[in-house]
Length: 348
Image (cartoon, rainbow, N blue to C red; front, side):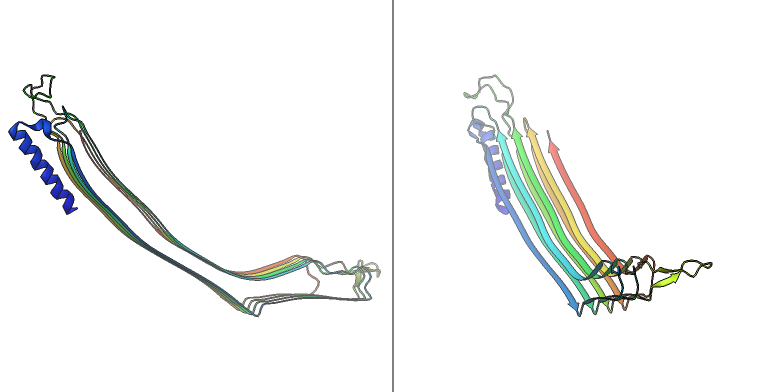
């Protein structure tokens, strides 16, 4: 940056000297650019899933029971943890100069210093713990023609999802398009009969963009002692047809049973920052532009979600109809930052 400023001053002094001595036709366009882009990113992700003593038991007993059957049984114990952390940074720095001159003189002088610094940190952690989940489905049929248990679906689930991310885009542009100064007729290189000296466009630009982002996310789901039991017992398996008759009818199958214990936690944290700085000059005779632009952004997002469920239990006994039982605990947390900074400076 210091070198750019010194070079700009030196070129400006040379231009003034040429103008004072009448030798402006020998002044050539000068451009000195210093660009620095620094990006530091750190992302850490951790996912832990623990399941202790899960048990699934399905028992069906049929003794002297023609046509008796048990329904489909589906049992599941699940513990899952998902964690993700990511950083995305895009930095673009452009500096351009198009200086025309009359006979090669009267060029534009441009000194540009651009610096973009970005620091990102994302941490994500997801923990899912499930202790002693148990599923039992028991069907007993003795001398029960046509008797049978219905479909049984049992589930114990503990899940935790965590995500943290940073996105930063920095764009810095500096452009100078300096037209030819108007020459005096006494200059041999100038034949257009101009009446003004070829003062070129002078532009000095300093742009600084700094962004710091931090995102942390944590999700914890704990389920302890979850149990599902479905039992159906039919002995004899006959019931009266109606009150007027003593005819016994076979007991029909039990209804469907659905039992569930669930604990879930979801957490997310994210930062988004976009910084755009533009400086342009389209200078004819004697355009001078000095620009200083600084953009700083600091963002921090933290999210935490905790779901805890202790000792949920579902029990079903006997010849039952459709039964649906559920124990659920949910926690949802989200934190995010969005920042957009735009700085424009133009001279025509």
